[in-house]
Image (cartoon, rainbow, N blue to C red; front, side):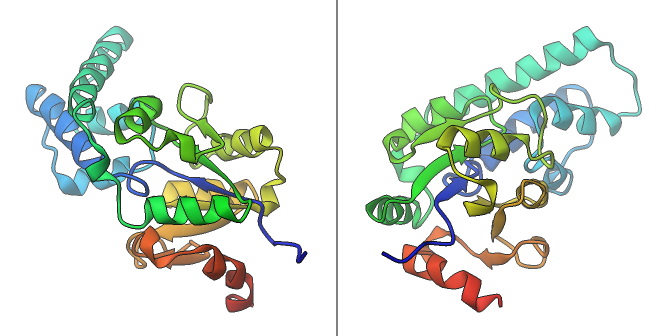
Length: 223
């Protein structure tokens, strides 16, 4: 049997498996409006792949005001409450194109699959869209201390899977996520805009453009 150059695929959740970015935006927008902070889709781009508290800091900086730690904790909890209200209504119809097909394809060829997401609501979302069983493990924001571009979440995931980092492929829609993948010594596939994800090893529009066979050929394509 031919030795594969990869043994596992790690997927970010938001923007790769499902599009919860719209719900994050609506929740952050509600908070920003409450605090009279200008916040649009443009500012929201800076929050992709960033933890909740780090995202809050980015938004509060736009106000030019100082807030106490207790106020920040309250704001973060308010945002999360609103966000959970949105995602609690999610259904399998919100799974992005090609996700189920790729995951099924990979598992049929013995490739391990995992989620590596900064979201602390990852398990709730996977429960709502009913695909948790397609992953060998799930690593989320409740299990790590450092946010992307720190590689911690991917290194922890690889350790749980018992797979060497260099044998992992990461699917990410954010610049911070691709940076984290590379810092972990992993191959980073960007999902989204090629002009934004310029540091990715390879870029696709969505998971429908990828398969097990295409992944096996990537090393040859990039050589």
